[in-house]
Image 1 (spheres, one colour):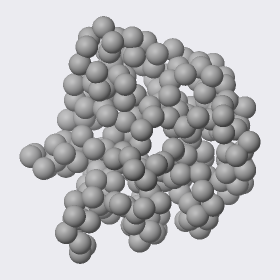
Image 2 (tube, helix red, strand yellow; image 1 turned 30 degrees about the vertical axis):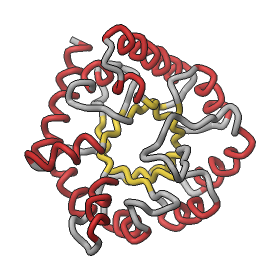
Image 3 (cartoon, one colour; image 1 turned 180 degrees about the vertical axis):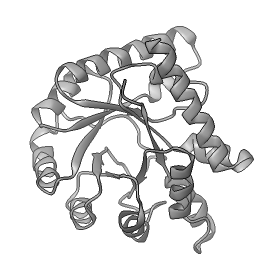
Image 4 (cartoon, helix red, strand yellow; image 1 turned 90 degrees about the vertical axis):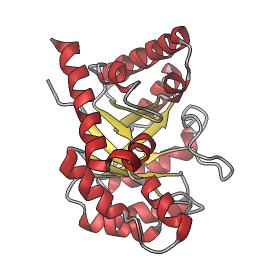
Length: 247
């Protein structure tokens, strides 16, 4: 059995830094702590408005990380140029609106196929793995396969955000089905957005999901107990859920 990977998103370390300015807390230091605690990769989203991660952060992460960097980016020429300059392990194309607080929903790959094709090809030509952040929707999965993406990351926010147990189960079934379809059509499947200690188990148990990307919850919990402790707990919950699922 392949180990379920954990990608730690460090965006909101930069959010705290930027609230006051200066250099503290340092996202690269957070990335190194995450690696020590068991993270398999680091995710950072360089937004067009630079509200958290900065260009300098991306440069340092790309040059100094010893684990893979997943560079989240909007499909724009500016972000493509930055990705090609730094050559992260992977680039995850996400939808982005300036007025949103965080990424809202998945990328409409089916509608944006022609526009996205050049970005996917340009990144892959430089040996950068391409991930598409999408809803757990068969139509979007098929569109991602037609683009020859390497990875899809399923947006699991609807599952995480609802407090209604029946609705949560319905959303979980969509994720399970989407992950199975991804496996069938040759797409590596990741999941993320809103996962917490309370919601990670059922998603981690899905055998066709290879990686979870988690950020905001981990950074928030770290305020109370420290980042290493928080990641170690998440890592344990993920491992326990996956091991129990295949036992």
